[in-house]
Image (cartoon, rainbow, N blue to C red; front, side, top):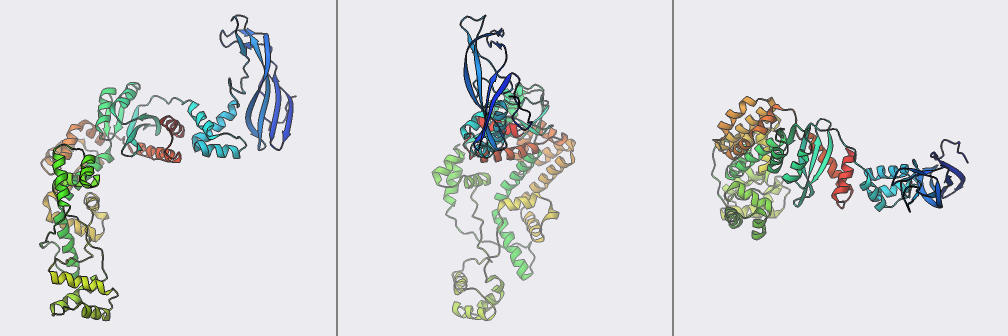
Length: 518
């Protein structure tokens, strides 16, 4: 029977509807094919010799929130030109060969799965009257073809963590169109080299300063221009400064304590004041780690043997010698009353009970133990450092030194100024790093070589050596407008998709969903 209602499921050519059955569970469409002949899939010739018939059951897009099922009678034919060949007629526009759902239903469920994944996609499909299992959704995703992208000209390459510290992959983005064009397994040179060799249209490659990616670009696309990512260059420069900051822990502590005394006593913060060193039991582990590092042992193995974290081993190796632990006690309620209690101590009062009673009369709200510990330190002759003299971390100090001084708080600016006075080598390294950042911002390639010559004679010689090895890419970073910023954004999208699958998806499934999202 013909269907005149446009909201009803459309009927392909060559199919006649015999009956419609509507119940609360869904709509059942009974139909049969009406074509005179069918084309043999082997020889491509038509045949009219019918062999037999059978029924196909197909799921289709829902109608009025009801699932739609086709019960379609199709025919088998004998081929007149292929001896013994029997084939089933095709139903174009409704379902593919051996399929149990219509092409339009499969496409809708695949699109849902691409966005949500397996089980979430199955739950939404059931809510939309398109019931399907999560495994089937994943199978549909994997069978979906990938639309070829136009030949890329400018690409950005970066790595991403499948399992941090263990398994990594490589993402390739078209920087002109700002979209992901491929995911590659691993972050070694070979997959990237092969990919570049298969895409000769690439003329510019933006990358971080990873050695494998540089090698892949040299061998896979030797005519392409390599551009070092400016953000990674600034990070490398900041890490070089941080290594120097690690070697000036004593100066950092002195400056922090002098600033505290200056704020309370009004003294000049740049005046020198000796600081006594306290033995740190971590010294033995540090010296052992440095010895193992000199023997060529990997950081992970050193950390396992000495029972320290890998970050601690890296800090010791970067500093090259033992550095005392930099953390100081936190603020105390006694800090604001120190002038009074120190005056009473100088007058000869040695009783913690009496001092606590007098402090309470002056508004002190702390407990007796705070006063007792302070008196104990005074009697033992141990160096008394104000608890409010917090020692900033090396990462924070590095950020203060390499950032814009105009954006710093007054106390942070005073700290960095005093530290640069106390550590001239550190000040020189900071000036060189800021000059390098100015080169990148202003786009001045002529200043690169003089900067390399001048900075190579300072404590950031290691950074300069690395830049010389990658000088062409660094020079291109100053001139070219391309960077890996869009690639980092695509990595964030990739992580969101990976986390939505609870980290259990295989590489092929993740690649399908990431490329679909792009």
